[in-house]
Image 1 (cartoon, rainbow, N blue to C red):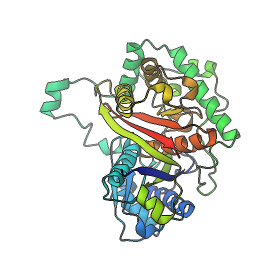
Image 2: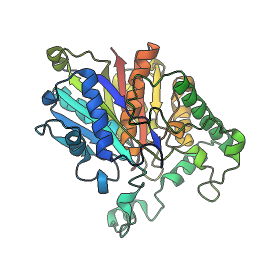
Image 3: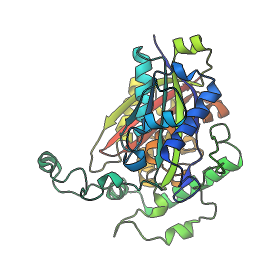
Image 4: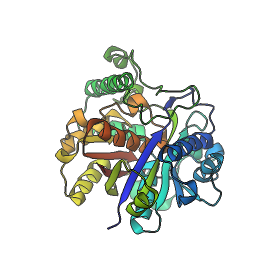
Length: 379
């Protein structure tokens, strides 16, 4: 049976908005991780069948098929094509899925998968700027099904907190732990094997070492009457990540040494108004298809788009929070939209190697009420 392997995975540090990566062209960020990945694996660039990158708000410097542009900006062979994927926040996780599916089908042997986003340079929701307000206005079919309800991630995060009875204090304790875990991981050198510095930026810029519960409690909610504050949401960030996905045949033929095998991949949908709940049914579906339980999973990465998302997922799955986002999450480390899925998978595969764990699970909420799930097994 054909298998799909992760040979290696690298990422830039995650830069905060207006920080050390703010002026870096997205193509150059993508080129940097691609070059670093190929150098570390010593893979022949001419043997790569495709480049699949995730990116959201593909306008301006992120337009024109950033996957292709990043590959060419890296000075790599023009014969290798590239394609850009938009599954909102899950774009680069889906890029890995498409790469693995190409390998599993036998139509490709080596694929570079990843993602890039410079949110300092291309503001969030730039693709919905004037004269367009949102993707739904004017759709008779959408209005017939969902009415004129506000479709907003901020409203969704508040609705989830209300539905699952998650109080603000509980979310603030979780957010503080995310910063503390991230700072400890940095101090312990936990990210050393996965980060390829970009210029003078050598480590993640997001973690706030001086934050406290008292500071969080003083913040105003993002929506009037809501529970979600800026401290309970992911940070606007810049960054890129890339993974080399290979078939078993390519591993043998090119003398590669994989880090992990992709055990399962899937995607599911849920209520697009609640929007951010899909990791719950998607995780249940993936574990069932894989013949596993949540207790079989040694480490989990679930994107901290908002604290309420992770805590609702935790209540439904019963996952041990000590094994979830063990090195911090997007509340502390940041969320460069189209790059985050690949960043999380990069962190997960290296964490399994570092800790000796066998199975890792990655999931994340996505616009439209969707979620991807990837289960990997350390080689």
